[in-house]
Image (cartoon, rainbow, N blue to C red):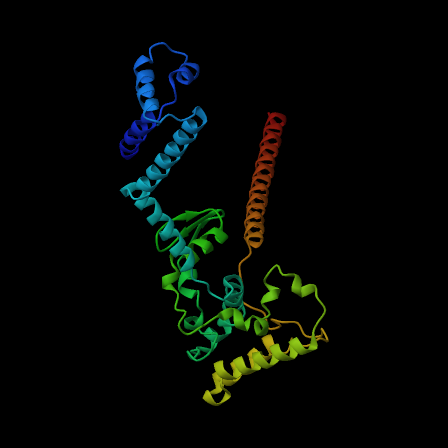
Length: 323
């Protein structure tokens, strides 16, 4: 409607400056434009006649102004305001995107090592790791989110917060980073990935750093970090259990931080996990034993019946001879 009201005065002004009648007839080629021709003749007498080129330029300027006015009016309309509001919202979300400088993958690898190669021995000693220890579950930035990741099948993952499903763990990680960032406690700057060097995270990750040449300076730094973890998590002055765990931690993790290659990490072993192959082999062996005993039973039963049949035949033969 705004465009229509703008075109009405523009067309009126254009008609007032129409070219002479002959020019109009050449442009329009129609005899029914008598009224327009008369109107242009009256204007020509008053000195207001213009050329056809000027008329076309004037019409073009009027059309351009009407398009600009319609664009301005649409931008001030409620729909245009909503579109601009959506764009501003997206820009604000991109500007306010949170960035955590802590590797989720390496934190997951560090916790896997702790759970498999340390916690079984801590539970055996019935020792409580102090919260000041950087290996404590409360000092893992992603621990709560990792516990809310549910794997229902090989390619089926579910978010424990909003129950949304994913077919790969990496997409669930992105979902947690984008949608549930507010559940992370980033105030204390706790990152379990910072102790990956001491815990040999590359041993449980598909990383190319295991194939690189050993750096003595890096090995010394990791050994120093490992020894500080042993002292803060298992102080030797807090009892015999802490003393034993301190020595165990040094042997399990710290002694392997050398470039000689003689000592391997996790030398004391880890959590004993039941292998699926072991279960399958056990079931097959039980089935074979069952079949073997069934075969032996049937064989003995058959031989016993055969012996009894032979005895009957021999007895009947003796009875015929005596008669």
